[in-house]
Structures are given as structure tokens and as C-alpha cells.
Image (tube, rainbow, N blue to C red; front, side):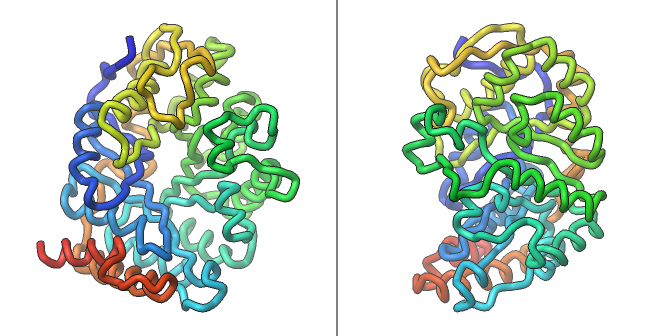
Length: 368
């Protein structure tokens, strides 16, 4: 069987990427085909293009009951080396709250992001930001690290190597990133974080157990990272015990992209459904997107989790961490924010503000 539909209703996908607002119809079609009721749009900002947050706000404005928005930070100041005056992170957080965003998305713990902006998570640049997010109780979807194979030239998958996702001794190391997170959590123990991709600890469940026990306000999401499925398939019983014990700490997610064909999206979501719900032994299906790698890369063993655990993972944890329903969007505030993002993009790239993603969203939202 190459396709799989969940037997559980009212699923919330906590990790979805929205491309251009012109892909609205594509994402809606993927959502319907995958059987997902609501999606959280993790909105990584590209300051030069005015993209990331703007198109997510567009989707929230157009479909307020269907989409949560986790707003990414805009680092125009440091990325432009001071040529552009960016907005302090604390002011960005307050702006996200005024608009009606549901939380924060952080990519700053991914090594490729660190290559672009070499600022440790413990740097004073982030100090007031962490304090403000903790004070407000805002949830964060946080990408920290990458698969362990990415630091080993002999093990890195071909699709990752082609995208220059391999790291060497000159790059930030995996344990350094974990140490920075530990320090942030020690300073701010009430932070409510959903660590994406199982925090890249799927090969070390004892360490994942210690991390959960030491940090009671954090969760992991299940966005594949196909290595996660292979790692947790090596000892299905141990994985089942972990998922049952920590059912309230695990959030469903797919890493769906609005730009992918509907069939690819259905297969990606169904892969995770099948892994969680069935006792099947299977491979990545033919026709899945390239980020999952070819079927011959590995075997996946389903965990056959009980319905009460599935409901907790598919819906209840997200509702507890983020909200039972998406927050209402202040469209006027959203337009003002997108206007500012368009102007920043023009200052950084020279592209006319109206031609940026944020500029096009301003036009669409202003015209109703």
C-alpha cells in the first residue's frame, strides 16, 4: 500500500511551509487530500525577498479557521551588516501578538542558518527576546541541529549532499547547538518549545528521555527527517513505550510544502500516519518527495499506537501548547507589517517593494 489515510479525525499538522501566496489553491488541495483539518504555517522570513511571514498572514486572512501562523524572526539588521535598520526582536514579538500570530518559528538553530548569521543562541542579541517570549508564554516551533549523518561525509544522503547540507569542522557542531539550548532553557525554564524533527534525538531515546524529564515545558514534533523513522524502527517496542509514556510531549507534523504536487503531499502525510497507526513493515513509497530519499534507503516498522495516544499526538498537544483554535487576525495590522517588510526588502535587495512577496500580499489584502 503506497497511500494511507488516518483513522483519526480533526488532525492538526503543526509544521507546514507556505510558499508564494499564489500557491493558495495547491496547499488547500494538499490539506484536503491528506485529511488534515488545520495546519500551522511555520513562517521563516527571508528579509531580502520580503517573504516567509507575509504569505502565511495571507492564508490566515483568507482562511481564518484553517491556519495557525508561527511567525519567523526578521534579521534584516545583522544580515545587511547594518546597512538596513531592522526591528529589535522584542518589538517583532509584540508586533506578532498584535497581528494575531499564534506563536514563533525559529530556524536559527539549523547549521545552515548559523552559516548565514553566526550568532549563538546564547548571544546578547537574543537575550531580551528569550525573556519576552517566556513572559508572554508564546509557543515556539524551533529547528535545532540536523541529522547526525550530515556531519559525516561517508553517511550523508545524496539528496542532502547535493544541497550542500553537509557540515565540516569549520561549522557549528551538533553538541555546541545542544549546549546552547541547554543554557537558554536554564535561563528561561518556562519557555514553551516544540523542537522540530524530534530534536534529532531519534537515534538516542535514553537521551531524549533525559531531555524530557529535565525540561517539562518542551515537546518534539514528528516532521520527517526520514532518518527519524529509520532510527525509531530499529527497536519498535522501545519506540512504542517511549511514545506511550511521553504521548503528551509529541506533536504531529509533516514538513509539507505548498509548492509540492498534491500526490507528494498525500504520500508524505500518509507515511507518518502509517508509521504511527499500523503494524506494517514498509519503505518510503514510490512517488514521495526527494527529501524522503529513495525507497531502498531503509525499512520502516509501524508502531500501532492506540487511538488515545494518536488523538493526543494528532491534536490535543498542539491545542494545549498553542491554542484550541487559531487566533483572530487583525488584517489592518497585518497589512502594516507587510508594508514594512516590503520596504525592508527593497532597501536590502533593490527590488521594488510592490514586487516583493510582502508587497503583493499588501495589494491582495488591501483590495479585500
